[in-house]
Length: 253
Figure 1 (cartoon, one colour):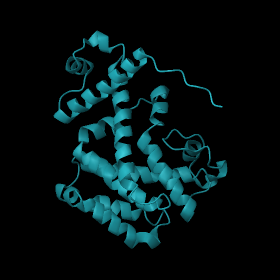
Figure 2: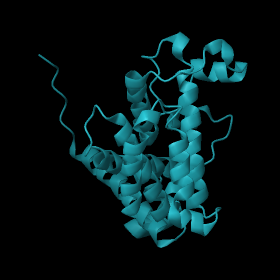
Figure 3: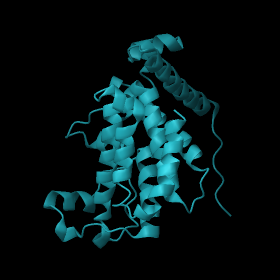
């Protein structure tokens, strides 16, 4: 028989409710184009700034809390949309999720920027480790793993990698499960990193407007980036099927 969990106390419930309200209020401020600050959040919640410090002690803690929760909520939406395809079709799920990731970034660029353009100092190991918990990162890399289990696409051997990259895949600081991947197969993590950088790169350019607006409107740069990765992920034979899914999702706006 399993151990019974201790009941949640009233104080703990209130504390969790306050954290939820902090995230909700912060998202509202971002949506409105207002400055996100401890003072602004406290004022919107009807609290004093010192009272808010009992929950988030600094602006950086506020950003980290809100970024994690927004990422978690957004990923749940992408995953829900992708589940119209069965679990044994991770390629279709990944295609849908990528489009929804892009749609979120275009519709809520300030949320996207808070989550993905929040600089981490090189010496800040605690925040670096926090990044490895990113819900979206785990979701996308889990799908890549599922695709690899089906397609067994090639990845570099450890001795083919630059020494710095080899060190990074052997001791990864990215949001991806790695313990189940044998040490000799950790070159797969380099595929994870490169695929993510391609997706993140094009979506960031579009979300920030640093791209020809006609190309953003048409979705052609994003579309081309996704199609470029079908071959490396062993999905070339599924190109027409996945292209149809991709275009259907893009047409939904």
